[in-house]
Length: 133
Image (cartoon, rainbow, N blue to C red):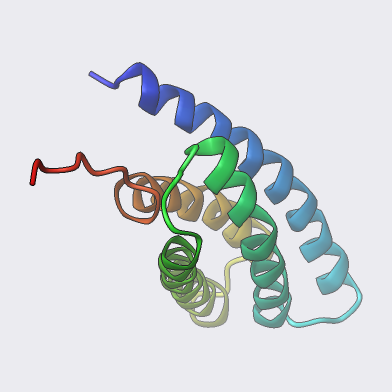
């Protein structure tokens, strides 16, 4: 069973993500319609998304009170992993299999978002119970 805390975190995370990803996906479509390559467009949009969501997720979604630098380093590392996964899937699905980049990237937005929630909850912004001294 999912705890009330996790449900609340997920709802807040989803609201941040939906707003951010909707705007960023539209920007991706604009960039690619202007001739920017699909992997370049995804790369630019991904960097903007990471930067804008860190503070929202840290402060509102997960209400994390731990160190700023360490959580930001973990956040960047987790999003580097998500970026690599997204990039590889675009290369495979679009460049190798010939699928439409608009659909592949649309699916990847949701797949990476769910993965990022789990990584942020259990690693980036995890609150560990303090052990008695």
